[in-house]
Amino acid sequence: MPCARLPKSLAHVNPYLGLDGHPLRATSSWGLMMPANFDWRSPTEDDYLKHLDRPGFAWEFLRRNPAYQEDYETIVRGAASDVGSGARQAKPSPGVGGSRFLVDPRLAANQVAVFWRPEMLPTIVLLERAPERFSEARPLDVAQLGDDPAERLGLDGRHVIVGNEVGEVRLWLRDGPQNEPLAIILPLDDDLPTRAEAALRLWTRIVGRRADHGREPLALTRQRCDRLVLMLRALDGHLSEASYREIAEILFGIRRLEREPWKTSSLRDQTIRLVKGGVVLMRAGYRTLLRGR
Image (cartoon, rainbow, N blue to C red):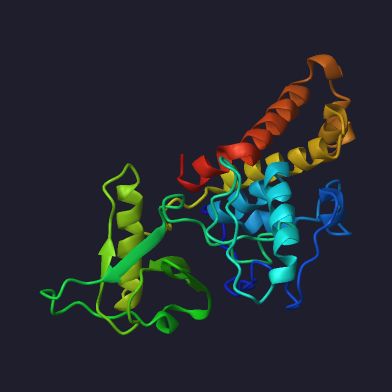
């Protein structure tokens, strides 16, 4: 069974402003940036994780990356005096990031719309002005695709996330008048099949037809979704300096651990694999996750 999608109403957050519209204040450490009620030991603390898609999980792993947190803190501190002045946003460190706009790592995936770069996430549909000879090409009314679209304007055009009862659509509309007929751009890269599937799903939504295929491009299976949740919880325990045994007790329960000696326990090996897998995804593996690899 495919993993459920995120709620459709995602918050739109200015890169230098919080959810309340006030400037964010840089902190001296990531520990101070974590939500006060965050508890990786609680089995219900992160129930929203069970409903994430690939972009949502990718953000959850990225926002735990100390290098990303440091970049964010440095950029916000440097831009604090320039909020509202139109100051340019600094670039993240090489190998870290991949979102089109700076996002506060304190915000969970169910609290913020993260706009990934199109080359990072192949389910983003690229659109630009159609050649003049294509007289039947049509403009796109984003409002007709779903309620409460999240949008960001960049130097390279509009970035849009919009969802409805059948799923989420991500768009990158290149520079040009909004009422111009559009064409879909499909780069000849290894992700072409996924991009084409995403483009077809957009077309069926535009013309009001029901998609022939049930699952969205790169949809997670329930098994993969559950494993990613375990990886995140194991990673949080590791980042909190908990031992492998402590992490295993939280993830699997003390009774299961008591069935066999810890040093030779299969749960010990599984816990170590979950932690190592989580670290890989946090450092750069989330990029692979985005692309369905």
